[in-house]
Length: 327
Ligand SMILES: [Zn+2]
Image (cartoon, rainbow, N blue to C red; front, side, top):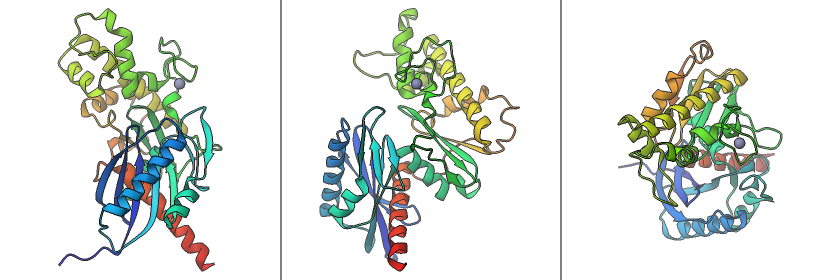
């Protein structure tokens, strides 16, 4: 007979278009997930959606473990993890919201919150590469680009919880790609899912015979660009090549900052094998000489690494409460 799992955590991962909820064990195994629609136009709307999703999940999904001990939430934007405060959903929209307290009061369970890439980094630290390395960088390349810097086993937060926003690291000072941050040649404009699409739109007139299907108002998927690049389409090849070169430059700049032994490449774009191999071709061996494990994929057994990390943040909130009860 299967042994009953004693305790679990309800984890919440807020994405751009959906909220993923799941029950996760204390050692990071995802037992069940369910997806809900969301609205991320404002923090208030997103908070309301998160609360509704949690209520619905708790009311309708039978829990797998005997006891649900905490709630952990991963969100986009800047988060004060220690204080449980969601500072802003995107740059310039600062609206500090005590998300942990709101959820705790509503559901009667300890709650922790952190940024989604920090959550994925925490999952990697506790259950992935962190078992082999105390100094690694988790680099998420998806719609945008951000990184979690693990130094001596600790994730760097920064003075305003804004460390690791390396999407705005300039890799080409003479680039024609102007960024929303006001600078030019940010790596996010060249190598992220959104950036690759922007390059297609910018350069398409020079390549009227491109095989890339472009629908007005639709984003060209990075995977489609990579597929056409592999098939020899000149526009796709140029964009993939430039994107890989830019990402390799950003990786080597990061290596010079914190001296990691491992770079973990995650996210929908970073997880593409063709793109990863293209990036590796542009890594200078001398710069990378102490990165002994090299550029690697995540060790997470599940595609829901963000959810596992969110659960770990929930577990941290629970542990803190236990400590305060004891003392
Ligand atoms: Zn920028």
